[in-house]
Each structure stands twice: as structure tokens, then as C-alpha cells.
Amino acid sequence: MLLRHEHAFCNWMFVWNAIAAKDKMAASLERTGIVISRIFPSILQRNLQTQGIREWKLTPIASVQRVTLRASSSSSSADGTESPETVSRYADTPWEYLKSEEYIERYGSKPVWSDYRRNHKGGIPPQKTRKTCIRGDEICGNPCPICRDPNVMIHYKNVNLLQQFICPYTGIVYDPTRTGVCMKQQKLLNRAIDTAKDHGLLPVQLPHVDYSKEDYSNTHGAVVQTPAPSSLTSGEPWYPWYGSVVPDQRELARVKRIYKAYLK
Image 1 (cartoon, rainbow, N blue to C red):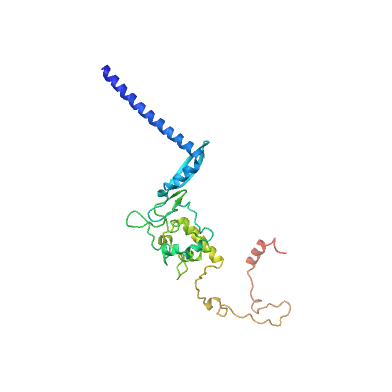
Image 2: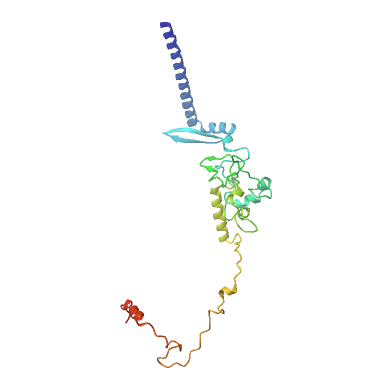
């Protein structure tokens, strides 16, 4: 019985020592990384770039600088999407991207939303698109046609892009369920289209209304011409039948009583 307890105690001590050694090793590795990031930041950056790490930065937390790494594989997916943090060279002139060879090679003469298909569960597509594709630093797996390409930027001067989302026959903006654009980008798109119309960059199509002349004519039977003034003497009414009208005395007294304070 005593030997069994001693054997169990020895096994427990062995496990405890193994856990303590593992914690010490992890703590030592963390301290080593902090020291290297303080002393050799340029060497660390060069090594991260050669290993395929896209971005790194030093963030001070509780007066200790720690290395934050973001792998390139997590920021881009198989369909060619890029991270929202990528700065486009067309940021100042987004309309130049639609004339570049890069755009023609990727989209050709089709709109940016023509080949987009949203991933959804089941055979029936959702009745409306998602609220947004990018939340902070996280991007969804299948972003909308505008969020998936960082070079496609909505601007009221980017007329060629705005025309892709407007029906050429009716002038109505396409519904997001057809283009697949998220609700956030759809609001920016509607605002840019309205601004472009106000600046005269996009045509404004007004519906044709056929006005009927009968509704605005004054020649129908209810409207007659005012008779010419006759030679009236003082005290005579304008119309000859007006003098023969005798008002009810009780009704006249009631009206005078009501408006007594306003009569002079």
C-alpha cells in the first residue's frame, strides 16, 4: 500500500516538473523575442519579408514592445482578393484604373459585377445582400465586387464605374441583389450617383408626362366671362337680381350676434 502511494506521488511530481519546464521555456522564448525586437528591428524585418510575412509592426503594450505579425495568406483568398489595408496607387484618381491594362485584363469590357456570384446556403439566394464585407481588419471570404478589388473606388467623378450600376434604358440604379454589392457600398454608390447628377456628369432622365389641355383650360361651362360694367348709379346693385334677394331676419340677427365684436 505504501509503495503504491509512493509510485503515484513520483508520477505526479514528474508531470508537475514537465509542466513547469514547458512554461519556463515558453516564457524564455517570449522574452527572447522581445529582446530581439528591441535590439535588431531591421534584421527582424528583413527576415519577416523573406519568409513571406506581409506586414509587421511594433505595438507598445504595458511599456513592452511586442511584435504583431499578419500572414499574407490570411489577408488574401484564392479568388484574388486583397486586404483592405492595401493602399491603391489609384487612390487620388480612381477613374484612371478603368483605363488601365490591369482592369482590362481582369474584367475586359464587362461590368465589375458581371461575373460575381455570392456564396449562400441552400438553393434560394438571400433577399438582400450583407451589410458590409469588411469589419475592421477582417474581410469576409467572398466580398462584393467593390470590396474585393481595392482599386475599384466609388467617386462621383468616376463616371465609367457609376454607369455600370445604372440601367441605360430607364436610368434607374440596379438593385444590390442583382449586382451583389453590399449595403454599405450601395449607400455610397447612390450618394455618388446623386452627386454626379448634381454636377452634370451624369444625365438626369425625367419621366414624360402628357399634360391634358382640358385640365388647365378656362373655356368650359363652369367658367363664364364677367359681364361688362353697366352705368350704375349710387346705391344700385351690380346685378339686377341682387336687390330682390331678402335674407332671413332670424339668421341675419344670429350672424350679427356672433360677429358683434367685429362689426363697426
